[in-house]
Amino acid sequence: MPSDRRGLQPRKQPRQVRARLTRQRILSGAAHVFAEYGYAAGTTNRIAERAGVSIGSLYQYYPNKDAILAELAARHLEAGTAAATRRQEEEPPADLESVIRLCVRTATENHHDDPQLLRVLMEQAPRSPELTARMADDERARVAHIEQLLRDRPEIRVPDPHLAARLVLTSIGFLVHKLASAPDPVPLPRLEEELVAMLTRYLTAAPDGTAEPPA
Amino acid sequence: MPSDRRGLQPRKQPRQVRARLTRQRILSGAAHVFAEYGYAAGTTNRIAERAGVSIGSLYQYYPNKDAILAELAARHLEAGTAAATRRQEEEPPADLESVIRLCVRTATENHHDDPQLLRVLMEQAPRSPELTARMADDERARVAHIEQLLRDRPEIRVPDPHLAARLVLTSIGFLVHKLASAPDPVPLPRLEEELVAMLTRYLTAAPDGTAEPPA
DNA sequence: CACTATTGTGAGCAATTACTCAGGTCGTGC
DNA sequence: GCACGACCTGAGTAATTGCTCACAATAGTG
Image 1 (spheres, each protein chain N blue to C red):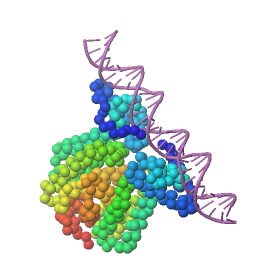
Image 2 (spheres, chains in turn blue, brown, green, red):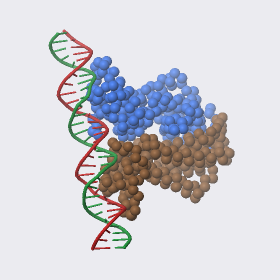
Image 3 (cartoon, each protein chain N blue to C red):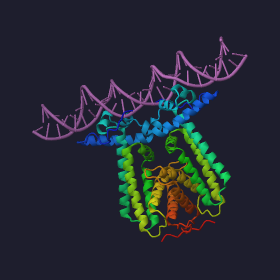
């Protein structure tokens, strides 16, 4: 099992349409194979076969197996944030509950795309420094965003907005993923309601145990 | 990579003390190796070396690599539930907050044991039917326990106790694990406070958005 | 057409892996 | 002491893996 850190950049830029198509086929082949077999058992030969491309072609565009997952991850993150910002611009959330609901919706859509692949991505991220960095950056940005939002709203009663933001985002990201793809899955609409309820109550309740209704 | 499902039962029962010691050394060697290298890169030869035991001895007691992880998981689960029930008998929780706090404490202790190994365990569980089953059973029992507890307490205002129990337990299990071992880790006492706050508010608030203080 | 750059191929190599087995060492009861 | 079973050893095997490379096919250009 070689693959001794050689960077994750593609080793060759496609100059013809044919090549771009090949790259695309490799990527979607990899997505299917990783989702079905997991990362370890998702061999490069299997990916090439599934993509309908020779193993040599695969290695013309990706220096190693990690690079394929890295690009898959990059595209996923990019698509996710793009969708989130677009949606936020279309319909700016009025109250806290709407903000939370928007986050939950984003997570559920994210999950709906390809739960299996998403799991592989999250599992493998900690073992690849480049992936970890990318995902940490993304997470940091989202946390900062929510944190600012919490600071701006007077109805928020929480001692540490930063911690609260982390808690909220981590909760959403994982609970959706976990409970929606459990052996006994929770229906997404139900899950959304409960999550929104839990988090808004957490954020708007006063520290002493009493609570106030949202403004 | 053979290992074609041969069952996870030990292939030989130790009859002498020497053998029991060997088994123990293999187990703790495996715990270290899996924690350090992950499951895929935690090879059986490395485990044997770390345990100070020959590879042949390893395969006298474990039919394959999966079986080692399975026993590790079984022991972990067993220890966890034992500790939880013992603690619950020592000091029966009075109010809801105490119940939640007890759950959180159990999770943090669980985490404190060996965060890395715990991660490997949770990652690998879905790929091994036996492991999945065992962990699912454990989870079901804990959920049922909390669910009953929620039903017994009048101050709980939540539409579906079963879903609420799942949500609470999944939240605790994962959030502790994730936030305590993040690159920027949240101090455990802080995390405990916030988690307890979040979950008690969720469980005791009335569905219409107002809330009542715990009885 | 010819010539070059780009793209595609797949047999096969080097490394690694889970796992075996023939034979040795140790403990235990007589 | 002796015999027998329990226990341990580790070089070796078959299979798998990520990846290379010599070559073939195709596209672009004049």
